[in-house]
Length: 155
Figure 1 (cartoon, rainbow, N blue to C red):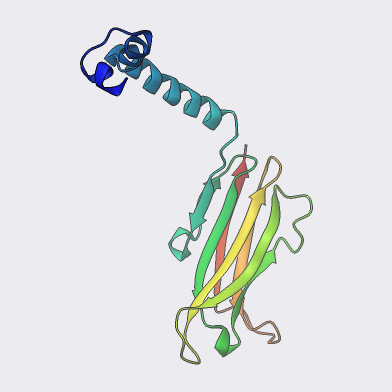
Figure 2 (spheres, helix red, strand yellow):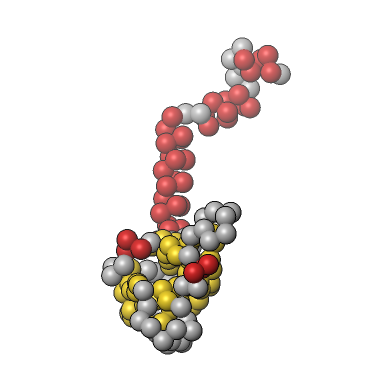
């Protein structure tokens, strides 16, 4: 049967497979995939991860409900300094829910190596507020070494 297909047999199987390879049908299939992807994206089936770094300090972050905000800030936990959310003190009543706050990963294997603190929040409701983080030693009664703030808007 394979030989007859290669020889140009006009059997129903051969005719159907040739129609499937028609450039017009291929283009229609590609178009259908793009339309489906666009529909899923706008329907909220796909959520974005908004990644921020210290370079985004003071910026406005626009998110959709379901999106995730990830903030990565450099620091060195071996010095006793850490990044903490200081404002708002509680996330209740804000559009965000905490996924992880202040997870620290060292960049090296040597003791005292600097690393990155990661904060992740999910946009759970609509609203606007300012999220402020501080790099400080929590037990000291001193102003923070650094602060980081972003305005979060979930329309």
